[in-house]
Image (cartoon, rainbow, N blue to C red):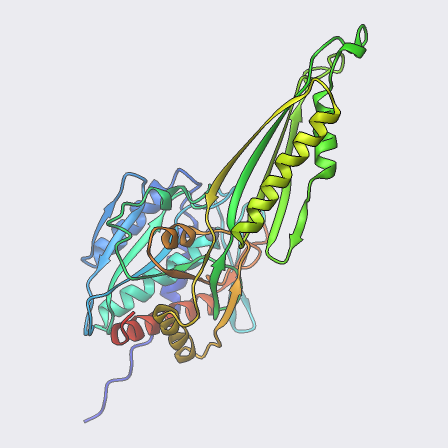
Length: 380
Ligand SMILES: [Zn+2]
């Protein structure tokens, strides 16, 4: 009697799935066609799914030879940043590998379809070959690129699980992101007084001058090891012959330490007050909004330990990274579902040079298959 050889995930099928996905237009807020494609694929496998009010696709994959009742989430986002209409992927043979790029007129959409394709193929592979796995929930979100809009719309039920693995980062397989920052948007309205600039300039108060003086005093760029700040907009003015009465500064603060962010917000407020005091007649209003909150998951968390175990089983060396970007995982962790973000293998996302290698997507799919097995055995 001879043992049947272990099944092997088909890279051509993975490539085909990825190419099908990137050819589907899915800008943020218009993910319906992408959602329909994914729904049709999981339906063929007999899996049940639902599309929630936020347009998110949620798929339930029953466990198999699992030793507990815990639920593992695999997640990625369906939307793509512009320019992303009519993407024409090009496949090139490079050193025995396949390199996939766009035709240089759009992004490729590998962010995040190089995450979605391995998730889909790994789960199909596990189901078709009866491989061990815990109960798995696939959460494919909408509007991730526009401040995690889809994830914010997820129901509590959808997030009732025990660990989440989100595939949405650049870099080689093995990267594990267990820390991400808070993100605060702020807007300062600097107000002065409008008059005719030629006839009575003495009676005007120039709001743009006010705003410029404020900006000059703000802490911008890398503030410290864990905090950054940026001004993205300065708007104001109506005509060259009018002293402007309003200038608006819009910017962001990112950081891993809540105290530092509080301190920096206070510094912005203090700067506005000081400059305003030195320019009689000016007033201001500062508004801010926390788009998402920081998280840090310990490397000894049982879910994180399982991810590391699966990485080694795949021949990958786990590498922990603190990112300065946000992802759906910020929302998951904040709402009580612990998780990490892993690489989806894409390079130079959000650019026309965005690309991915098939070998990376294949490693990603194998990593996911090994994760299912580890998570089926080891409680998390
Ligand atoms: Zn992404």
